[in-house]
Length: 287
Image (cartoon, rainbow, N blue to C red; front, top):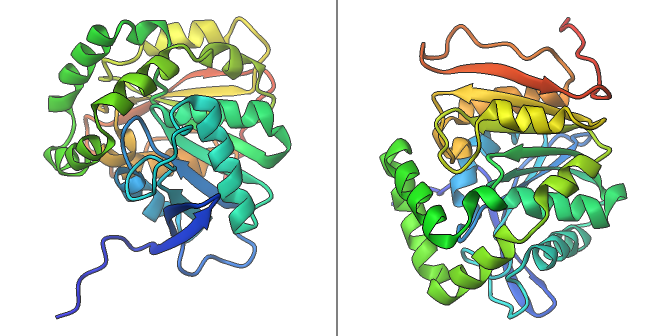
């Protein structure tokens, strides 16, 4: 009996600068589809991003790479800080012939996107930052570990089956070095200098982040293009735990439509708009 594919996306390999890179891609994207790439978090592969990515793959030319040093991709000694991972993302786009894309990140993937936008502003259309990690709120390491320990039981049990093998493969030395790079990265500074439409999605139960209204206060202090949405009932790994809701939020943002709840969602899952930047594209009514 043939093996059931692990994903509705096509599984592929390429070789970039002597390193084997594993990625997933929309099997049959529309010819005029906008490109969307999903960037994974700390120590993880792109596998846990698939529930959301798959729901968007018929509308967008979707890529979900395992960055070098993560998941099934090969390792490089210089792939353990945020600027290196941003360059690796640009190298992946070069290899795939992608000139410009929307980037969707979770956790550590958000600083990678911010660094990508800082160095390659002409190559990013929009940014979607889901549960951004790093900075003072996650320091020192023991505090971050407590936050992760608090978050674990708030995530679906199936998340552990995906995450644990990835963390084991990533290893302790890489974890220590990557954590230092992550918490020293100037995420807030980079976020506030963005000049592209940017969506930040925060989980109301996420212990790794300050309260959503505090993030909104910070964003409101400058002239930004940032839209901040709070998803009630979600914790940190929103891409895995709430893919239907997140795909809806991303789709709405990409089409510049008003943020609205779906009546079919469970009663304990609701979205709230926390902040809309002055120069964020005005929402247009559907239809």
